[in-house]
Image (cartoon, rainbow, N blue to C red):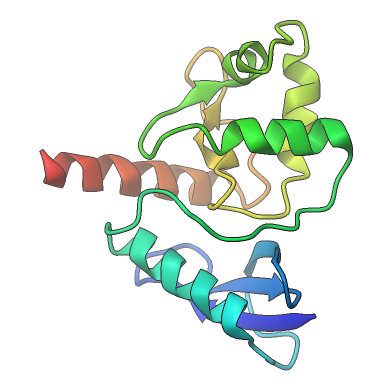
Length: 159
């Protein structure tokens, strides 16, 4: 596996994004408080870092990277559905379940959301409670709030 720790932009809650890739795909994008492994980047980790840099700069609104997220078939279905949520949009867990054709599975969607290994690119931060509250983000509610506000700010600047 190849590892790269991308510094996050000023003001972001966590100092690094840890990108892990094989030779053929991105395995995970995680938040990291420190560089806890030796870096050995490859072309994919660097392409991912470049795309994430574009996201933070307000120049990249969706990602076209080969992903190798590991999970159950249901989790992969949820993660694929999450990637359909547009930049600056939010869906509830119920909206996500409905989009999958499984309207009674919002709790299961929440469970799969919690196991998402590829943060930001698979935008689980865009899923909120049915009452509009920010709930359940593996990186912490502060990070979720920051990401959503970042997207809204960028969209406001583009209008």
